[in-house]
Amino acid sequence: MNKKILYATAMAMVTTSAFGFKLWTGDTEKVNTEMDNDTKTAGYWFDYSDKNDGGLSAVTWPVNKGTEYDKNSLQPVIDYCQGVCGDFTLSKGEVTYNPFIGLGFNVVGETSKTDKTTVPGDASAWGGICIAYSCTHAPTLEMGLGDEVDASLGYDTPVKQLPKASDGKVVDVPWSEFEQAGWGTGEITAAVAATQLVAVKFKIQGDDQSTGKFRISQIGPYQSGCQYVEQGDVAVRSVRSASNVKALVSGRTLSFSGIASDASVEVINLQGRVVMKGMVKGASSLDLSSVDAGVYMVRVSGKAVDFSNKIILK
Image (cartoon, rainbow, N blue to C red; front, side):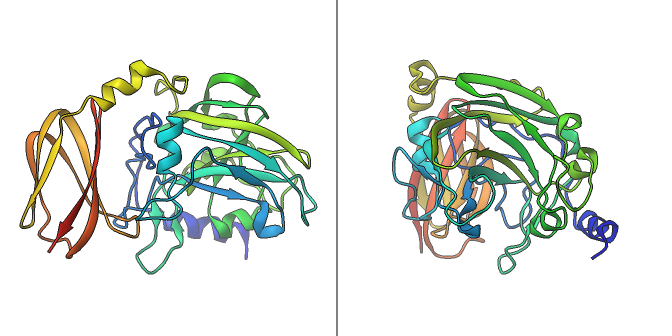
């Protein structure tokens, strides 16, 4: 396919404009990109590696991934790490390039409940990315543009090389500093890539059989105030744990009490999908009349609250 036609097609799919996304502070498995489409599948952290090409690279997580709702959920890891962290081994297996592992989140989400193709969005307004991390190797930030566009570029998407930072580092990177490496099969500028961004990726690639550690503490749009918070910082976690929040279901009304400041609420089904979300404060309620009967997890998160509970709708 002609590259210009391909990029025009991708641009035509963009349905959401970015007004910036909220700084992720290492507490939930979902980054709030503020560009979620109707599928509510944007922002969930995922991990990937070279295994699809025959590589053997892997991450050893400090605790097992998965919840009763989603076997691939990174929420238990995030709860433990106060961010995302793990030990990695880079192993070539059958690949001919340097092996890699990576983490990322989608910007807009999937096309529909039946079409899992990820949708691009215009993230120009973000200005770039800030990230607080530690890593024993020098990682890269990558602009994921979706399977079709990535392949057309020979997987040479715009990237920003980050420094090795064993003790933690904060980096603010404008889109203008993202560049292709030059070894691919197509060309695209970071400015254009930002208008059709599918995913933000944190990738670690290196020599065969090398090992190391990583941790992402915070991530957000350019100049949004990222800080590297050490794992186990009591002052940070005590604010979130001192919650008197209660949730009660009566029919199809979900009522809350004890929420001192604005907080977001997500109702998540057994497949890990957000079926409803809203904002609450103090004694508030959420109308679930449009939600099917079943078992759900309710998650409330805000400046001074981090609460989750299982509910049953009949």
